[in-house]
Structures are given as structure tokens and as C-alpha cells.
Length: 147
Image (cartoon, rainbow, N blue to C red; front, top):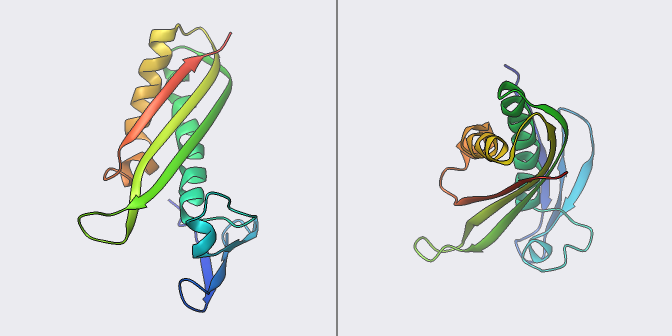
């Protein structure tokens, strides 16, 4: 299986520094990062590790759910997956940690009822590789079919 690479170039201290994250394997882009924007409510055009984790999780989850819904006898027309990743204080160890992830999925899947879709959605939540990597973070799921 392949290895994928991202790279960050950082200049300065935590509060006054900034950097750029490069998606090296795909060449898809380079994105600005800074700690003040990471901790702010408004990202102001910069990304953050949490947003990158959210992107990875939503994509991984969509792939996993698509596979499981198909295995359950459904035909996936579309899945809309959103991952909300929250950063908060780490009260035990100090600093910060991911305090929760909420996956929200709305699907159009022919051939599955709500119960079968939710079962596939729960299985995908536990089984996608990014979920497995994030076992130390509480992951919640809101899954529903759309008509």
C-alpha cells in the first residue's frame, strides 16, 4: 500500500509564527497555517491541523460507507459527509487535544431502508482507517437517508 506525504514549513514562534502545509504526494496545494488562527473562531483564510483531520476523516468515512452500503445491497447515489473536529484544552496533560469529532452524513442510497443505512453508517464509523487512528477521541455520528 502507498505512503502519502504532507510537509509543513514553519517560521517563528507559536504565537507570532506561521507556516505553509504542502500536500506533497498529490500536489493539490499549499495552505497557510498559524496558531492564532487555529485557536480563533474565524479561520481567516488559513487551515489548521483540525481542518485537515476533518478533511481526511470525511473522505475516509465516505469511502468506507459507500463500500458498506453497497455490500448491504444498496446502490449509492450520493453521500454528503461533514466532519466537525473540535480542539480544546487537555486538562490532564496540559496544552490542547482533540476533544470530539462529529460525523454528519446524509445519503441517497437506493435499496436500503433507514435501519440498514444506519447500520452501515455505524460500521463505517468504527471501521474506516481514520476513525481507527483516532480511537482516543470521542466520535459521534448523525446519519440519515434523504428521499
